[in-house]
Image 1 (tube, chains in turn blue, brown):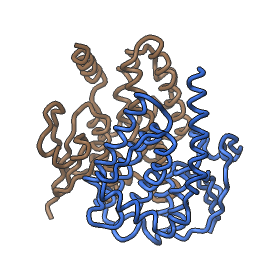
Image 2 (image 1 turned 180 degrees about the vertical axis):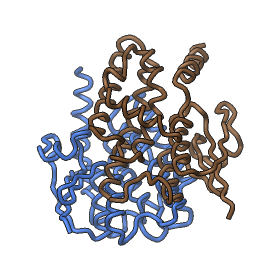
Image 3 (image 1 turned 90 degrees about the vertical axis):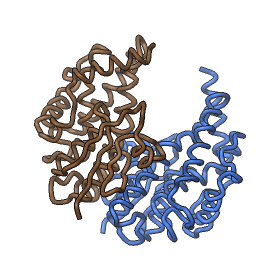
Length: 224
Length: 218
């Protein structure tokens, strides 16, 4: 079988999602750490449209976009399935993945902005969390996937486990544990799962990195 | 078991069009129900409580929402006719990537062109044309995005063709001049009965959009 390489970045939640999927499925891979301000020529060649990590390269062929990669892994390596087999249940899982993908940019916006723009992003992030709390498919279960982690857990994990660092660095609270008991329990379950716990960036290092990036971004936007 | 397939939709919606095309490609008999978005039906609110949006496919009482997810569901459920997604996982991933690109760029890009004016519209127009060129590049010399066969990416993009006339009139440009291969692709798709039946007339759509603009500006 062709080898698998992953172009990744240690601080990226999008890379993390792919790493979690690879590890859960027991797929051996070569981790290629990209130095993000200085993207490698290879990365730009593999992802000319978005020029972003993660990029999975299976043999000679690149696959881009974290959740597209996860679906590709699911189809190519069916062991430890991340999606149910029933078409309707698959559609429900994909609905929640899309919901998370569509709404989570608000979380990054809280981290990237200040003032009114940040406040709006904070409200939208909180709304996303309330909807997941109320309607999410994990009622009475350990994970969105039931007893084991599935594609929805992986998608949300990339958001939820970075939220704390973003709150700390931006000074803006999004997650109210008192109002989100089910999601709070989910975070504890997810974080304590061995594959996840062993594949998370160090919190202190992540906060430093995010703080530096935020300062750079905010000072460059005000100097325009 | 008697199959019951209901589609909650509105005729101008490009997302609804995707589902109509997919159902017709598969020869599925369905009950098309036109929603009034200013007065949403109890069925819509019950079947899509999170977004309260169309399209929603209800198959034997079970709802599926989000147009591309519905198209994937249709492809996985009615397998005997017109496969829309490739069986090869890598080609499947490529199809997902490009449908995702269409989703990220076309609706919001087109909307910016339609709603903005002056300098802002020029910028929006340039960006929109750039996206069309990227898509045209991906199409290359193939008949369809699916290669020799009409497929998932074609379904995801073709509804936006019905909006070209309105955008061209609003921002004074010609998609055919900028992206001739893409327009040739669109006309090829329009020859399919599933597409011709599912897309509204461009002029009717333009009139409808003008009406809505007038109402919104009041």
